Image (cartoon, rainbow over all chains, first blue to last red):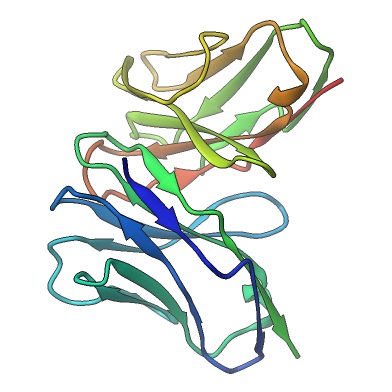
Length: 115
Length: 114
């Protein structure tokens, strides 16, 4: 069964600095997709970035980039130039092959940005 | 373009009752997925509907059911509520299924079972 591990329950970062949130995954399928979502205290899940297993380049979306290391089965999220509004819970998720849109989520990392 | 809407936003029920939650996807989206989020179990997949057909189902008891209408709106029903059903229920919509298509989440329905 697919599994997502986020080993950092909580992280602090100084405003304007970069931060890396860790995510490792476990799957035996060659085809899969990896997602990062942000969940503010309001509860809504906000899509940040997507990486397909066959994508040759690391995904980037504005201040977000995904450090995809396939051999190590890791998909770390890098947030550059942190802002106070980045304070939230961050989830890594994997879409199962042949599972439609089903996502398997990690436990999440709480990020707090300090001014 | 309107986002995903969920109603109601908050709900309080007592054990043994049943509840129906509604999710209206983004216009044109045909896939709706439901998730349960609790502090203890995290985010867990309930089911996905695509073009009115259940595409996939998570590991939940039969008390949890869902359906999708021809306009892609989806409902989920929980019968014989238990205290452990207290959770944030999130739905996500997507234009298609089974690819890297972005899934857009709604604000959630927070259910409290007393």
